[in-house]
Image (cartoon, rainbow, N blue to C red):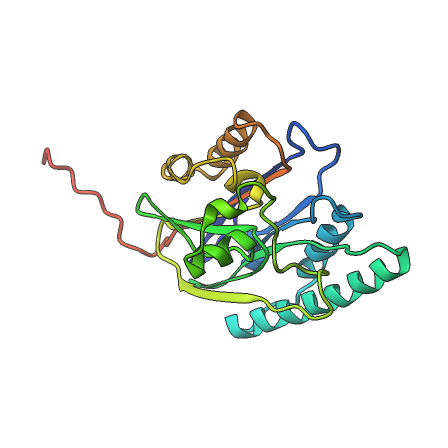
Length: 252
């Protein structure tokens, strides 16, 4: 899928239930014509995770057309804040502790992009064949790593996330901005990919620049690694059609 513009974006998305879970609690959004992509992962082990991830994606899909990147981000924050309140009320009504979801979103106005997230779903950037993680997990493991703690202390227990939509009465989102370049490839994914698959393998899948092939390969890698969680990937590429890409034939 794609859009004809000065800075055309193309993308491909895939989601898979995995080999262990009984239902898929991931959801995604891929709207290159609007410069908007997202992945939401309903909190595993909690009730109605698919309801939460679906509500997150639906809210982002309803964002108004952006005037600029700052306004785009502000609108996303506001809409997701409303979802947070709705999920808290829904949890109280259903008498369950939490109905929640992670969220990671990529928003673009021209080449100006913003990553917005809460939880451990991630965005990576593959630029000129090199992979970089643009987000930082809101999780116990990441917090311990930042403090220089003993990571082995968490080996015997699950790596719990510390922030998610619906997890608390108030929600904060981290935002990182980036000026995209011709040929950049972004990957949004749930932890069903990032946990079992090494970054070197992710980089190898993204480097050729084929969104559809990369999405297929990444899901296959997660399944081959056990597929213990739902797997969702959105691969996004930008190409500057105005750039001078003249190729010189060395034989002439």
